[in-house]
Each structure stands twice: as structure tokens, then as C-alpha cells.
Length: 205
Ligand code: SAH
Ligand code: MG
Image 1: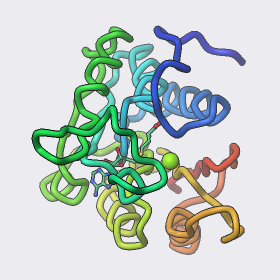
Image 2: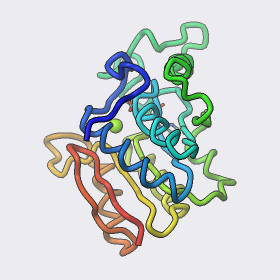
Image 3: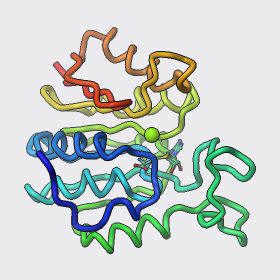
Image 4: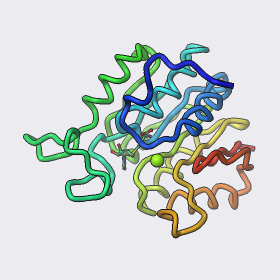
């Protein structure tokens, strides 16, 4: 089923294949009837547009958690550094301006709550049950494990956990997202729904 997004998603910088984005959209359309959606790792808002456009259908909401300072690979000199997202004054990455611009251009401001904070800080006092958690933040084992432990416990029974950048073969990419994916399955609390490219979709039992 093809979907219609409020903006040309190709113009939003990011790290999400069209197939993965469409899968997120359909997932959020279903899951947001169970509770709000939360993503860790928004960057410039590519995944956020897919998720929030689906939330809009049922007037649910997306909590978009990101400190907007970039992951390891976005820092100056690293493989995915983008000088356009660098704040020269602060000498720090800052994807928040671009994120806001994209969410506004998509007219999704009423369905997105930006949470500009480290994931662990945002999670500290979190108490709201969630219909879908999408983990696409830092890719160190520590960051991914923290995201897993912080957020998956808030997923309602029947709700969903989606994890991006799953590479079963270490030759294809870092192993932390795959590690938390295996952690979820081994916990006995989740079952696999589908894999779409590198996106793993699990359901909370
Ligand atoms: N989902 C995005 C890509 C996210 S890239 C897309 O569709 O294009 C990963 C993002 O995670 C970066 O923007 C980075 O700032 C954020 N991030 C990394 N570690 C984080 C942490 N500990 N807390 C909050 N955000 C984090
Ligand atoms: Mg990713």
C-alpha cells in the first residue's frame, strides 16, 4: 500500500530507506490506537515525518527524543558528519533547527512533541504507556542497551518495538542494534512480526 506524505520526504536528510519508512508509517497507524508513539533518534525528522503522519490519522502523538548533538558517526571528521548541521558558535552538532523546519513544513507540529534531551534523561521520570517505541539512537552497545532498558518497559501489551540498523552479519554494520533485538526476543516478552530491510518489528506479548 503506497502512502501519501505531507512533504517530499527525499528532501529530508536522514538514514531511512523508503521501504523502512513506509513500514514505520503502517506500524504507527496501527500502534497509535494503543498509545502514543516514541522514537529515540530523530536527527532531521525523516522517521518522525512517517511516524507523525500516521499519528495524525487518529490524533495521537509522537514523542521525538534526540539531544540533537549527533551520534559518534556524525561528529566532525567522522563518516556521516554533515557540516550544514554543525553549530560553529557552540562547536557542536545541532540538528534541531533542521528538525523543526521539516516538522513545520510537513504541518505536523500538532502531532510531534520534541524531547531535546539525552535518551536516559528523558526516560528517568517517564510514566506514560506507549503503543510503539522506535529505537534509532546511538549505536554504541551502551547507548543501545540503555535505550532498550529505558523505553521497552513502557510498551503496552500488544504494542510494538521497532529497531533500526539490524545487521546480523557483522561485515554489514555495527552489532549493537542487533544485540538489543536479540535481547528482546530472548526476554520472552516479544515476538518477531517482520523484518523490513534493516528494520526489525516486534510485538509485546
Ligand atoms: N531516525 C533518523 C536517524 C537518527 S540518527 C532518521 O530517520 O533519519 C541518530 C540520532 O540519535 C542522532 O540525531 C543523534 O543525535 C541521536 N542520539 C544518539 N545518541 C543519543 C542519546 N543518547 N540520546 C538522545 N539522542 C541520541
Ligand atoms: Mg538508523
